[in-house]
Picture 1 (spheres, rainbow, N blue to C red):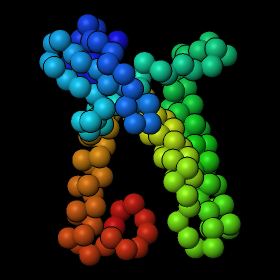
Picture 2 (spheres, helix red, strand yellow):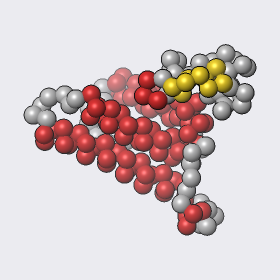
Picture 3 (cartoon, helix red, strand yellow):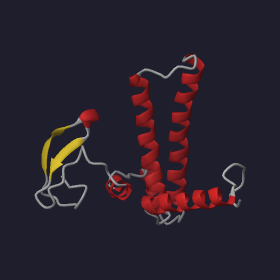
Picture 4 (cartoon, rainbow, N blue to C red):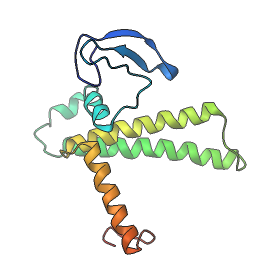
Amino acid sequence: MNCWKCADEGTILVGTGLYGSIRILCPECGGREGKEKMLADDYQRIAKSYAIYPKELEKLRNFSCLGICYTALGLAGEAGEFANKVKKILRDGEGQLPPSETLRELADELGDVTWYLSQAAQEIGFDLSTIMRMNLDKLHQRKLAGTIKGSGDKR
């Protein structure tokens, strides 16, 4: 098992934490996964190891936008699953917050959205922290310009 902090392969599995998160001890950096917050770029690096494209599409790998297309469709699908669960909360929940198991299902869907977002960023050559920083910079500029409300990319 690799340490998420330093990528050392000599980590020791200690057990599982809340919601199944793996807690490890790393002899190299002493890192303990589970309690510490994971950085976006660490997540992206680890998540990449789970990227398996369908075999039929792998044959088309010379098709330059294959990865972007595949991850964009996956991102839209997972975001749709999240939105559908929220719609059912509105329809069935009478304006009340759902029970914790439903919130956990929403969090699971957001995890899937995050995976596809991470891989889409990877496909276009950006790490998540850069995209996050770019977005905050854009929002800050809009706030300064008084254009947070409104529509259009260039405001």
